Amino acid sequence: ELQETKTSEYFSLFHHPLDYRILLMDEDQDRIYVGSKDHILSLNINNISQEPLSVFWPASTIKVEECKMAGKDPTHGCGNFVRVIQAFNRTHLYVCGSGAFSPVCTYLNRGRRSEDQVFTIDSKCESGKGRCSFNPNVNTVSVMINEELFSGMYIDFMGTDAAIFRSLTKRNAVRTDQHNSKWLSEPL
Image 1 (cartoon, helix red, strand yellow):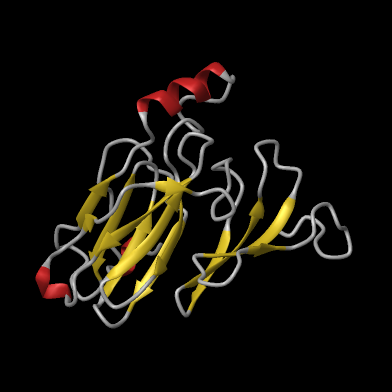
Image 2 (cartoon, rainbow, N blue to C red):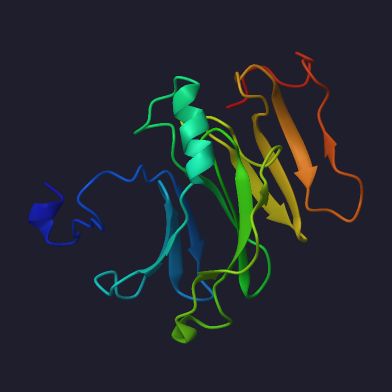
């Protein structure tokens, strides 16, 4: 029905599903950032048919092999499923992915203005534990406030310990009490 109204357009970047689950609207640069399996996209919200900027960010080969050896689904689990995209400052995004059940995070340079057409990974990857879920099928909720990341997720590989973390901070990183049902009970 929506296609019949001619007010929408089907969008596909690749011929196989990429598991789009996280979006971030950037009204200052007129962009929408999309996190998917092994990719982060930057689309122009004023011209959605314009070719998107894209960063290919797969999990390391070693981590993918370890994931498969652990018996996880190679297609729907052993990739880098981007689950956190937050504006860090005027020029950078902070992004995290499941990293084939070994969470990783990095900074993306998005430039100062959308006309710059800049969209590149700007630093080495760091551990995403406490910032992103191990399992790509489990949601991570996050917000960046004054360059501090607050994330809610299951913190362990088995998905039994739910926590809210404060990280990327000049103060001490903190988390909610472990296994305390008065704090969190299946928060996601």
